[in-house]
Image (tube, rainbow, N blue to C red):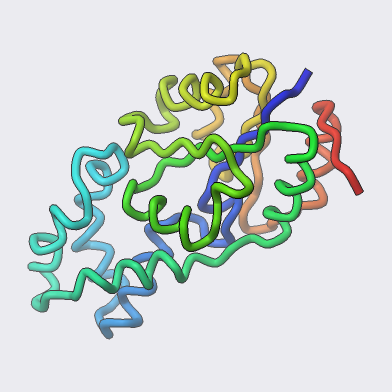
Length: 205
C-alpha cells in the first residue's frame, strides 16, 4: 500500500533541470557577465553548499573573485525567486495530497530552499521537505531517503519517489522505494499520472 509520495524539486516541480542553472542564468542576466563565467566561478563550491558544509554567505566573496567584480549577494534572493514552477506538477501534488503524505526530497542549498519555502508557500502543500544541506546527505546515499520516510512515518516500500535523474533513483530503489523517472525535457505529466496509477496511487479527478 502506498502511503507517501515524494517529489524531487528542480526538474520535477520546476521546469529547469537544476537549481544551479536557474541561479547562474539569473546572475548572468543581472550582471551582464557570461553564464559560463558565472558557472565557473561558483560551481567549485557546489558540493559544500549542497551538503551543508558552507553557505552562500560564507563563500560569496571568494566565489566572485574570478569575475573581477563583486556581485551584490542580494541578487541571490531574486535568482531563487526566478525559479520557474511546473504548475501541472504542483496541481498533481495537490490532488495526491488528498490521499497521501506528499513531500519533497532534494539535493539543494539550505538558504535557497529556506527562501523558496516562504516565497512559494511550499510548506502548505509538501511535508516533509527534506533538503540535502540540512541532512548532510545527498541522493547518492541512503540517509536522505531514510530520513524522509521516517519523517513521513512510512516504510520505504510504502512510498514512491519521482526524480528527473536516473542516477538519483538507484539508492531509493535499492531501499525498496517505488521509483519513477520523470523526463524534464518532455515534462509529460499525463504519462507520470499513468505510472503513478500503475503503482496503485489514487488520483482524484
